[in-house]
Length: 197
Image (tube, rainbow, N blue to C red):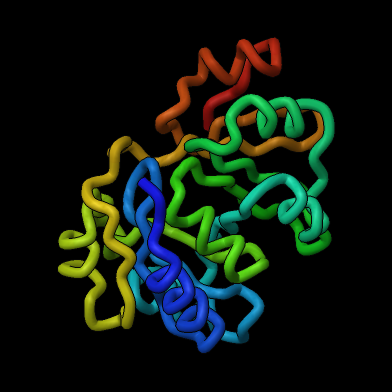
């Protein structure tokens, strides 16, 4: 599906004004904010009803945007990124601010939005904390509607399973959350046995 330029431009403008936007991905629907703005992550946490200390993944259009945030992608981290991006893998890697999760989605709509904004976006699943993820725009609006001003509806999510979250610290590879990419596929890329926590 090719995204229409009008809605993408509207969503990009809304994000740069501090508005939360619901976006489709190849896994589940997401809730996006512009992390360059003060309070963006706080707004996401408030909409989801979860504590402010919960991490939020940064979506990027490609490796260049990830590295521009100071992410350390070498060895296993770079192998995983090259093998599974774009795709349903969230890599938690070292940055100047500690550890940060990054993902390059494999869906035309968020990729077009990321290119239009020209920066990473803070994105988390578009559901209330503890509730099942939204697999379509209607479910996302039902869960978060009063907190969101704009929705990019691309029909049902094709994947339905959240991304796999993997933390890479030097040679240590840990699966923090199982998801769309199996541990076996990760093992084939990095060798050895990633630990589950």
